[in-house]
Image 1: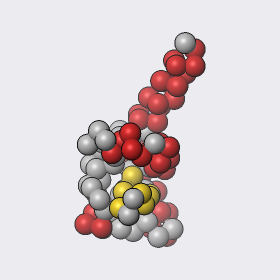
Image 2: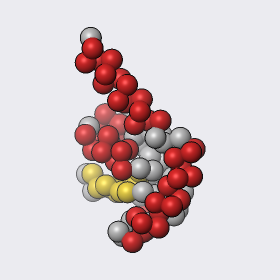
Image 3: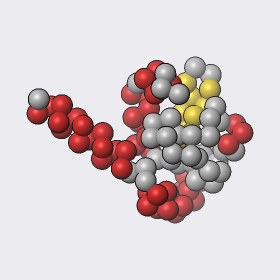
Length: 95
């Protein structure tokens, strides 16, 4: 039971990182991520939503991307990418 509660708390902490405040903070991170080569257009992504947290993505504010089954997915944060990649089918089946 304690493990379930702890897991739920971790999940909530990750999801809360995707709120509007995090989006504002990501504007600074965008400069860094662009220098890492994460300067992608929305048209190049499989969807305009972050499949992990459901946030709408905007060009210039995509923190990271991942390829899965031949498609490229964008994420608002590294945490969302990690969460998605832990079980991509779970999140893709919820679309």
